[in-house]
Length: 315
Ligand SMILES: *[C@@H]1O[C@H](CO)[C@@H](O)[C@H](O)[C@H]1NC(C)=O
Ligand SMILES: *[C@@H]1O[C@H](CO)[C@@H](O)[C@H](O)[C@H]1NC(C)=O
Image 1 (cartoon, rainbow, N blue to C red):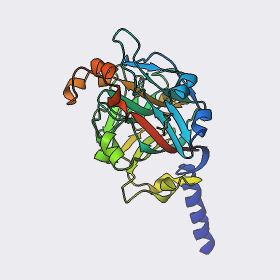
Image 2 (image 1 turned 180 degrees about the horizontal axis):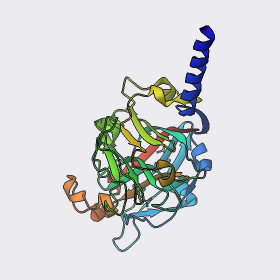
Image 3 (image 1 turned 45 degrees about the vertical axis):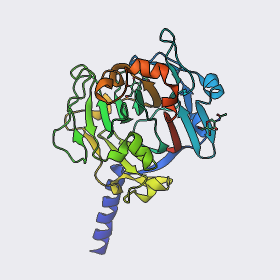
Image 4 (image 1 turned 90 degrees about the vertical axis):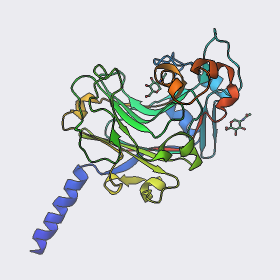
């Protein structure tokens, strides 16, 4: 009897492990460590933003990236008045040198960019968009919270309308061609998940788990009382089974996650106006027009910065 029970227990533990709920740390980026783990992408904004993505030398000389102790700051320029015929506001887009598939990514963020016209994002994407998919973890525009987490794929990936998540689906077809690139999004309920409210509460933690069978996103404000200890402490291993119901849950019920999502790089970017922030600018309670505001009001972007405490990846 005893040996039967211990055998059953062992099988149980082994099964749990096979489900991949426990992950070990593979990468930990703190302060200047971000600069060796990521590359600068000085590319034209594919979403037509009023932005000028700069390389590492310009970013350093303009102090758009700054590392000290456990601070890594990434910001847009907040000093220049721009000519309407010249390039957009200097900013930074970073891409991780490593790629990931099955993994857990945890961002510990003190501050995120805010200001009218801003469109910041923490997301992951493959080399061949949309065929390798896109996972938006933190994204929004014009200080309008709460956050939305969104998948973008090619044809043949939809989400069940009812599933175990605390957020609210805004669309269940992830195919960019069907949704005019809106993807399948999940709106968070916690107002502290984005923008000024995120910052007033000291930021918090964003986590994304990805396997061949599911994608889950969680958020805990710094001021929340239910932050799992492995998340809070940046532990060397994490167990997502202990994190509670995710805010966004994307199962493989009618989406072959393992084939719709390839090896992904992590991207950190901050653009202005463009296809999303520009298009809804007028209904965001922001002054003037987006491009004009961004051109003429550098001091409005004093708080358009990320301050990361760390980024840890588990596999
Ligand atoms: C910035 O991030 C968003 C992520 O959702 C993406 O759609 C957009 O293309 C990005 N823009 C640039 C230029 O990186
Ligand atoms: C560069 O940016 C950091 C972080 O925002 C700030 O603390 C520092 O004073 C800045 N340095 C200069 C020379 O402006």
